Amino acid sequence: EAARGATSWLSHLEGQDLDDVPHMYLHCFYWILGHLTGGQVNPSLSPLTYAERVFCLSLVSSSLLVVGWNISKMTNVIADIQRVHMEATDTRRKLSQIARAANAGADLSARILRFGMYVFRRKSSLTLQTSMKDLLSAALTSELTLSQRSPYLSKHPFLASVME
Image 1 (cartoon, rainbow, N blue to C red):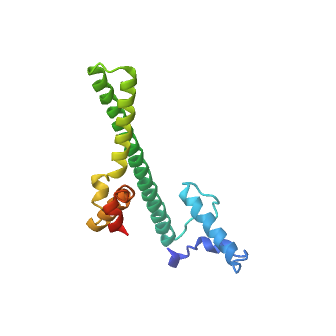
Image 2: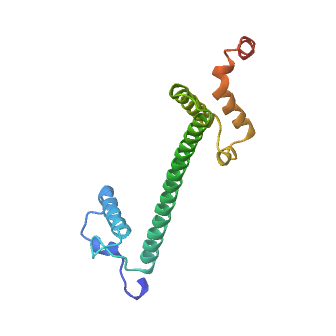
C-alpha cells in the first residue's frame, strides 16, 4: 500500500519536534496504548500501511495471550489456596469426629485439635507438592530437606559434632 501513495502515521507527526527522543517515545507509547485499549486515542494516529496493521494486530494478540496467561496463573494460585484451606478444614473435621467418637471431654478434644492442626501445618510446610518436587533435582531436594530439618538435627549431640 505504501507504494500506491499510502502514508504512515508518522507522516502526521511532521512539524512535531521528533528530534527530541523522549517526545518521540511519548508519541509512540501513546499510539501503542491507543490500540491496546481497543479504541483509537487519536484518529489521526491510526495504522495506515499494511506493516502498521500487522504490527497492531500482533501487538494486541500478544497482549491478549499475556493477559490470558496471567489470569490462568492467578486462577491456579487461587485454586491452590482453596485446596490447602479445604485440606485443613477436612483435617479439623476428621479430628473432631475422632474426639467425638472417643467421647473425649472438651479439654482433651481441644488439645487433640490443636496438636493435630499443628502437625498438619508442620507436615505441609516440610513436604513439597509432587508437581513442585518434579521441578527440582534430587540434589536440590535433598539440600532443601536438610536445610528445613537441620535445626532439629543439630540438637542431637552426635549430629551436632558431625555438622561442625
